[in-house]
Amino acid sequence: MAEYTIVGNSIAANSAAARIVSLDPGARVTLISDEPEPYYSRCALMYYAMDHCCERDIYIADKVHYERLHAEVVHDRVVGVDTENHELALESGDKRDYEKLLLAVGASPRRMGIEGEDAEGVYDFTTLEHARKVRADAERCERAAVVGGGLIGSEVAEVFHKLGLHCDYFVKESTFFPAFCSADQSRIILRRFGECHINVHMSRTLDRVQAEDGGRITAATDTEGDRHEMELLVRAIGVTPRTEFLEGSGVDVDRGILVDDTMRTSAPDVWAAGDCAEVRFPGRESSVIQKLWYTAQPMGWIAGAQMAGADDRYEETITYLSAMFMDLDFAGYGEMPAPWNGLQEISLTAANDVDSARIVHDGEKVVGITFLGTALTKEDCEHLVLEEMPVETACDTVRALYEAKMHDRAPKARIARRRRLSRRPPFWPFGRKKTWRV
Ligand SMILES: Cc1cc2nc3c(=O)[nH]c(=O)nc-3n(C[C@H](O)[C@H](O)[C@H](O)COP(=O)(O)OP(=O)(O)OC[C@H]3O[C@@H](n4cnc5c(N)ncnc54)[C@H](O)[C@@H]3O)c2cc1C
Image 1 (cartoon, protein in one colour):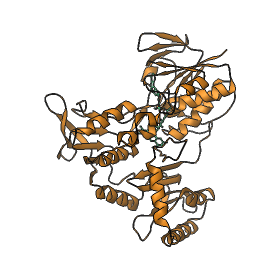
Image 2: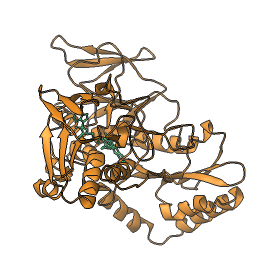
Image 3: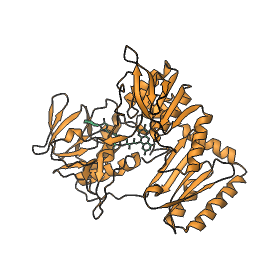
Image 4: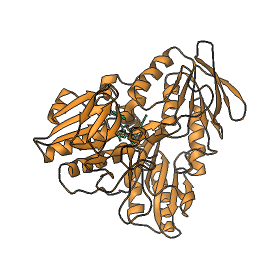
């Protein structure tokens, strides 16, 4: 009977465990996790934090789930891996042998590296424990702040808005999501934040956190020297693959844990999947780190297959992302970071100054599209990329779509329904959920 040890208890880990037991029904699986909760939806943390659901609503796993996976869950932290002796060192002092090992440890939040950032009331927002603290603190605070112009930062700003807190939001870049949004889209998103009384400070980040005697945050100074009072601060400036516990282990690490398209690492009987993995596809020079729920799932699935003896390979898919900024839908399909790829962009904004598309092209054909507002859907847009449509034709198509939607007789009903659905706790990929790429 083969034994499989998985470090992690989230999407990559559980997807691997599911694949292992489907191929090896006699498998014995151990999941080791430093989070005490059962497998939950990290993507739904904002809904819990803004009190739209309770903690149990975001759990994906229950006892039956683990029974089906023949899995035992151990609550501990792995602090070292001895790949020569096939042994794990745990924070509790225990040692554990492994036969086949999967590292599905995700990524950890970046620190700002500024004075005072360890003050009480300064939190990350990547675990349920963080969300609990933010939610509890928000109840007794009036002034909150967020630093970081990524998708987690914008989610947290929305949480503070929904909880009725005064919110300062610091974004280092001069436009919102420059990798994904046109200048027009950035302007429309910023206008929406303003309408919701979120004070967005563009081209600014934080320089120093001030705390009272007891150590609790009272204010922070931004990079322009302005002081902002706050009782609660969320740091959302990105995440990096967790690799520190692999020092001296013989598992090769660069920006993440290096794997090939079989998710195998450099060490025998060790695989890695999800946010912690850096994938080098055969025949390609650059490697990719994908920090997304919807990519962690297939990575785990492939790793599980390989561990159980099947020869499945991981393939990169066309990027699709969707998010929501205060009820404004945002989605993208295909290649998006135009300014850095030698690609060009065309911005088309509808007469309502809300619906706006950014068409990314290589001079001839469309390679990506992002759209904001409520007018277009994935179905409206993906064919422009899949059919590699000529730029002019794509622009005409989008203009015609905007035109048609303006005359849509039931737009309000459609929008209201989408908003209702979007407020449901999103157990993506099991129900409707915005997904995003970082
Ligand atoms: C607030 C938020 C919202 C998000 N929303 C979206 C979204 O809408 N769409 C989307 O596609 N993605 C979203 N993401 C990203 C998505 O959650 C991640 O890409 C995904 O969770 C990665 O899965 P994973 O299994 O690789 O790692 P993780 O989910 O990070 O899980 C890592 C696991 O490893 C365990 N672990 C780590 N180190 C150790 C150790 N040393 N010893 C033992 N256990 C350890 C942890 O306890 C955890 O169980 C969001 C992330 C956050 C934080």
